Length: 237
Image 1 (cartoon, rainbow, N blue to C red):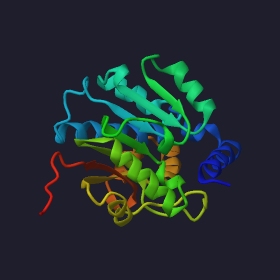
Image 2 (cartoon, rainbow, N blue to C red; image 1 turned 180 degrees about the horizontal axis):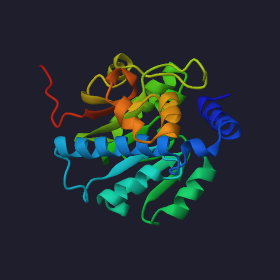
Image 3 (cartoon, rainbow, N blue to C red; image 1 turned 60 degrees about the vertical axis):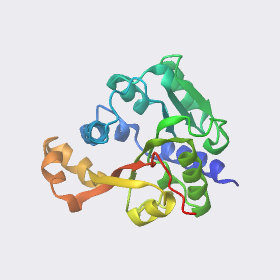
Image 4 (tube, one colour; image 1 turned 180 degrees about the vertical axis):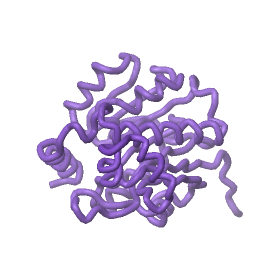
């Protein structure tokens, strides 16, 4: 079975075994996690002089039902500059119901999607690479994403860095591995996201507990990274 088919099976397994409340915006733990990530993305866009955003083209790899594309629309990105792709037809159908028709949504394997090289200012991925268990699949997707980024643009990366001993369907992606995947990139990153088992527990006690415990960096399990593609490549003779 190919990696793409295995990923679809893993998502089906998750849908069968994981309570949908875990990923609901009405779940305080999930809400605080997303709000922290969104604040960090806004800071990243500001710090790396990516404003204004209305003229920036963005591709969301593994876009699911489109929550991150909705967030980009809220920030002021233009619908006709946004694109998303996912392996699962059912989630793309839901995304089409949520998003403006101008957003380019496609079903299929990202590496064969037919987007033009160097056609996006930003390519983003949110917990996609941790679902790729084969090294060559990670390398292939990273190479494809990098080729789609314009010089001077970059990749927004969000994923966890530790293996989960309770879930063998995912793998952590360390900073060392991230540098191996994008050797030509200039990386700046932040540790984010209170460890999900902790956040789910403490938010049942009081949602404000998330911010308190998240102040301890060793309890953060994810990395949000900007991987910049140099605007000019200097070649030695």
